[in-house]
Image (cartoon, rainbow, N blue to C red; front, top):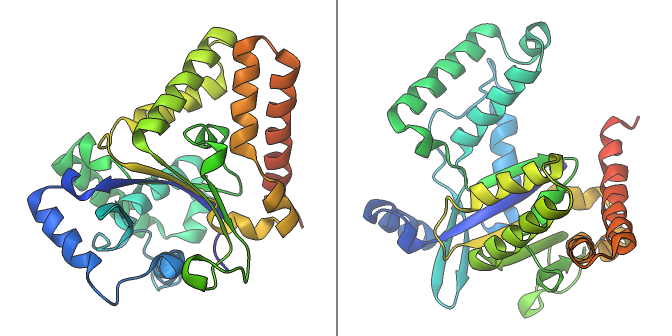
Length: 285
């Protein structure tokens, strides 16, 4: 079973990478035994589980992952590196910062934790803040409201178990949105403008600002993807079909912008209630 996590990803065109990286990713795309999209999440999750179940556990890989998610659009190759080592370091730093030492030691011995932190510090000193840019953001047990804003309801792609996909092949259960970076930035900028004017500097505005800054770090011709990942297994077919969070938030923003406060409130509350009910499953017995 996959972790109950969703992913916000940026795929950069091959031209965004250095010549050395460009050649490496081009060769990778032509490798027949690389993890394919349908099995990539399972492969990535399997690597993480194997590290953490080892003796002693390894919070981060020794080397950076050579794998990536790939997309091709009009013969252009787009690459979203896994960056498993960097993402593991960042996640482990958050874990140590929010977990009491006595509890954290039950998961990772103190000596291993300190060595992992030292390795991460050396990496940061060598690469600076630019080296901390990740192409993938992860959220467990829910999807942050700000993640829906870069997309349009018409960009929604839903596949349920056993349904036929492109070419008649059986698809895996998933719900995905994909858009261009230009559209994503424009929609997030519009949302920020409306929120600042109508509600001011509140928590949701700060979250949207964070997403906006993150999107600006990438090539302007990139693709942005919201993948419900393992969270689709917390929702039955009916709930997945009914989930129109992107369209509902867009309607809420339009309501705010045009003075239709009742519409804005109703649409926003619909999204909040849906995801609160899912997030509560984390503590369900």
